[in-house]
Each structure stands twice: as structure tokens, then as C-alpha cells.
Length: 276
Image (cartoon, rainbow, N blue to C red; front, side):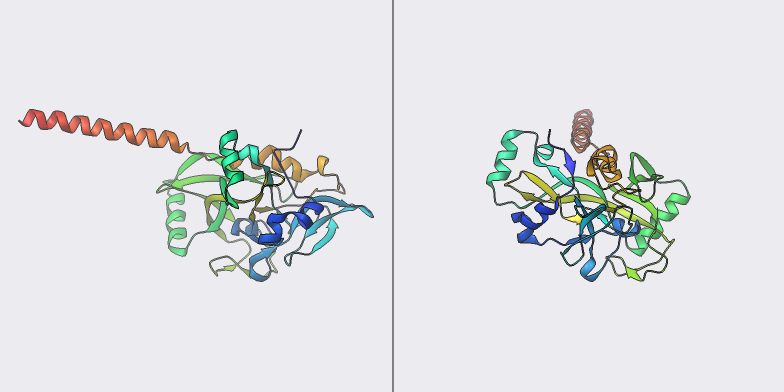
């Protein structure tokens, strides 16, 4: 059975048409950077493949920020997770999938994840509301596995947008910046906006590849280069794939708005009738 979610293989990185078109290298999100993900020129980062090095079974191949293939030990930190999803996971309806495959679309949106830190004004606003316990929690949190112990980031909703509060885990000696130009300082707390995930579609293999590096973690905490037994596989299948589903059913919200509108217009008509 084909995995719902996985990583790219070395062969896929080197041969997929969609990566030849858009480039092998991948841009990092602020969330990825705050979990100690390395960011280099043009905000590009390094990311794992699922292919181990045949000559050293403790090493796994990764793509560096320039788009070149390299390898390192499985327990190295600072490398990113660039998930790959079977297109049938995104389009369970065969007719919808057929339309996408026959279209000119290269990029689709599916799921959501914390991505970008907010500006200074909103950051201050959210932090004040948080400290006063005036922010509403959703029923969802996001998991990071930078170390063997997992860390959860609670999701909050404010003015129809969702955010998580997190501490910058970037190495204390690193001098880097977030996407808005703000200097990334170790230990500082920031609010990060939850946004739609963009995926590159490869129509020959019926897969969708995350456009960005979404989070960061070791391949495995110990010398284990077998993807099937890796910690990164556990993260993808037990946490990530479940957590990217929206915490809010927008269809239910739309229905609720319609019902509220109908109730309001009905009451207005009754009131106007009484005035007559």
C-alpha cells in the first residue's frame, strides 16, 4: 500500500519534472526556523530525503539550500521536513482528481500549518490578550519533535485567523532573520500565523510535494537510517497528517451564518408587519 504521506527519495529529487521546473531547493517558513531549522541564502534551508547512504548506513541523503545532494548522520538537527502526499489524499473524489490532473495547475492548497510570524503590533496585541486569558483556544495543537520529548503548540483564534505562541529555538549563536526582516533571537516568544499549505503537483507520480520546509527535526534520534523505522516517519504519520486538517469546519460556519441571516430577516419581516 502506498503511504499517504512520506518524504522524497533521492531519485525523485533528481528526476521529478515539477522539481526541475520550480527548483530542488525549498524556502523555509518562520515556524521551521523557530524550531532550530537552518536558513541560508534567500531563506532556503536543508531538508531530508528518505534515502540512506549505501556506503554508510548511519547517514541519510539530504538536499542542501543550494539544491545539491549531500548526506549526514540521522541525529543531526537543523534540517527540514518537506512532506510528500499522495494526491488521492487531497482529492478523494476521482472526478476532482481527474480535473486537476488534466488542468494546467502546478500548485494546490491543502491543509494548514503555522508558517509566518506576525508584525510587531499584532504580536503585542495577541500577547496582551493571551496574558489576560482573553484568547479563545481551538481544539487543536501542533507537535514538534526536535528532541525525543514532544512539544505542543496550542492554537488560538482571533478575528477569524489562527495563531500559535512559541519560543524561538534557533541556536543561540546564530544571527539570522525572519521573513519580515526581524532579527531571530534565541528564547524570544513570537506569535505565528496558521496559513494554508501550498503543494507542488507532480502529475506523473500523482503526488503533491510541500512547497516550503514546514518544520525541523532529526531523521532519527539514534543511528537509524531506515525510513520505515525512523522518528520522522512517526512524526509525519502520527502527528503532522492529522494536525494539518483545519480546526474549524468552514462549511458548518457558512451554514451557521446562513441560518443566522435567515433568522434575522424573518424577525425583521415580522417586526415590519406589526408596524403596518
